[in-house]
Amino acid sequence: MMQVLLLLDKSSHTLLCEDLRDKIVRTLELKGHQVDVCELDKGDVFQCLGCLLCLTKHPDECVNKDIVNELRKKVKQYSATFFLTPVLFGHYSSTMAGAINRGAGSHDWQVFIGYGEDITGEEKQTFIDLVSKHRGAADIVHPGMDRKVDVFVTMSPEDNSKICEVMSYA
Image 1 (tube, one colour):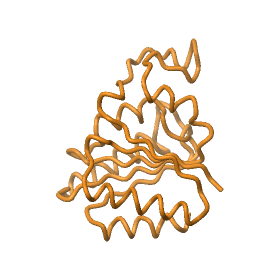
Image 2 (cartoon, one colour; image 1 turned 45 degrees about the vertical axis):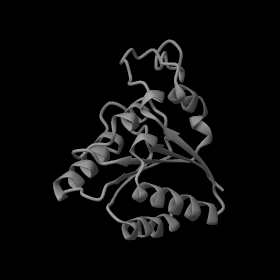
Image 3 (cartoon, one colour; image 1 turned 120 degrees about the vertical axis):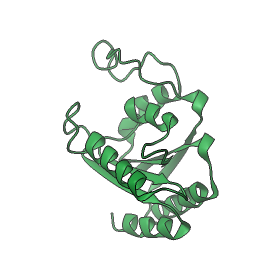
Image 4 (cartoon, helix red, strand yellow; image 1 turned 180 degrees about the vertical axis):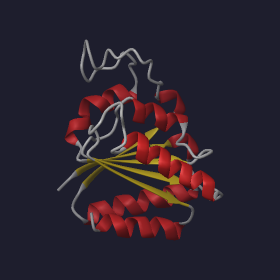
């Protein structure tokens, strides 16, 4: 059994996001995993200051006292983290960027799922490329920090179901 953290951008809720969240939770729970859902609101997440104190003076403790700081304290208990984010011009939302950049996710397995009903092919490819390169094996800042990174983009409930089918084999 895995303990999974599912993070989503509360300020960007859509019916597609709700369908995705429900299907992922159901798929993981059917496999016997425990899922903790955390909805992050724009005002709940501060951006990284780049002070590096969380890496030098007080490991795993951020100077920003927000929900991400609390998540960082518990991150080792999670085997996987799912980030559900709207795709905005090929990027994840600023709320999710704050959580991602400050290390709110499991370092064993991270799953990034971008969603939106009107994503262009270029935006989709940009999202996949950025996440794959900056969170995965090509991460030159923290090489090897995240062991496994998967990236998906969904534009429909049918896409959500296909993503969950892939997840059921993991």
